Length: 175
Image (cartoon, rainbow, N blue to C red; front, side, top):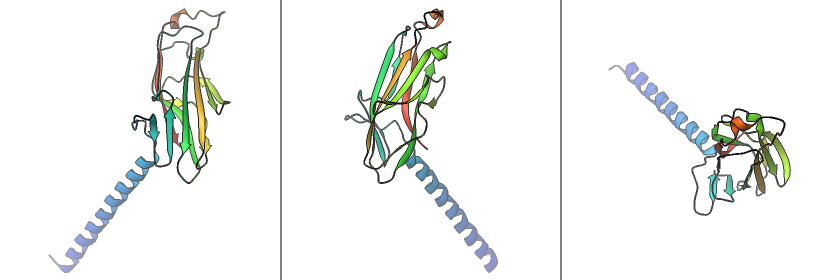
């Protein structure tokens, strides 16, 4: 092998090595900035990242409402705490969604932050937001209530959806 070939092989190896380090570092950074729901522990800590944690009053981010009839109301309470040192922007979403309603507009979701309505929407058919972009300052804890109601529309025939279900998991998405 000539000196020039040896130099080319070494430079190529260094470039490939740097590329691998860059890919691994970027993947790790992406992973650590995204909130995961799999970090539940016995204290009710259901969502955690280096900078934010969510505690669900029932220790579970899951929504599972079965055999619904018009007028049914389901409530989920949780808190978010910014344990970091920078303001965080996020959305509250529901993933792993199951919604077998035909009249999807009959299932209303109201999100309250510290008892103030932040958004009213319909329960999604697929992964979808329950909030617009929100932010939380360092050291702050916010209380949230998600209320899901099967609206009673007495002038409409709702019989095709009676007894159906909605489910999903509340998830905090980094924005």
